[in-house]
Length: 427
Image (cartoon, rainbow, N blue to C red; front, side, top):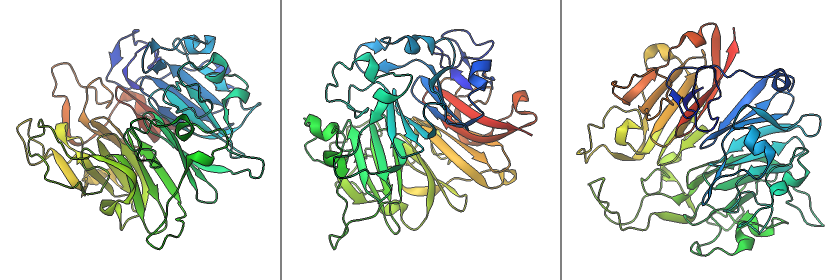
């Protein structure tokens, strides 16, 4: 791990509370945590981390916050996770197969297709209660998981969720029949179900039987579209079918691949008075013609296709896209891109296996187990070991090197605004 240790975000030896590290630091796990199995997946929230083991347990550490009052301390587990990694879901009670993290909430997919949610739910992102203003502790944290289950069925149906994705304060689920459900904050259009974003009625944010959460997606001939994959981040959602890519949400930097009507300001500091929200699914023309495996980011998006090629689109200040074209705050030409631009890596990098991105920072890892980072290293989250007087803007992909990586192969990574996690396998 690397980045800011805010209330236990980076619980590593030698990292002081509220301190930070820009170097790779190993997270020491207790015997109790190790007994839950080997970690196979990581998900980074704003200031917390979740890890999934091969046995199906979920481990969490760091600090959960809500949108109004700051830290959340309504349950003993939320206090313990600031000090050290703790078990949230035990594999002997439930087997989790996938996790996804929003800013301060976590979504878990169980092996039988059930969905569990954990953390802050004031924007409806937990999807389990309409009382979003004051969620009782047992609905935020529950060791056996019973109170965390999101019920998406009525008396006549039992739909199985096969994929999950999380934005900052919203969640997207894909059912096995290709239907998509969204819930949580929809003010920027990221739910894709209603144009009444100013005052969304509770049943359109949270719905116990799931009927109001289903996103209606049809082609030009009014035939239902079968969605095959889902992606979410920040205030946006992207859906992929066999032959189309759809996007909706906040498109203020053209990163959703849909042209914004009207003339855009050339000055990045000028106010853009155009309608920048996509309230219902639109075909994302910039993403067509390729099959995507990774799509991630907030104001810029980094995407990897099945051939291992990596592209960037959207806001490019601080060279967030890794193109090396942005020259400073007075650069009115290269601060934003409305088309997908291919990101070049050093020849020795080989094929890229995966990508992850958050606000102004991006990272990729290769099939050979190396990692490359670029963008703005605000808090050491890029893991490049930059000193205080070093330039913090990394214009193009730079290889991460560390003594901690000797004898290890990076398998995946998850980056947040202020910290980053790397899953590595011993060679």
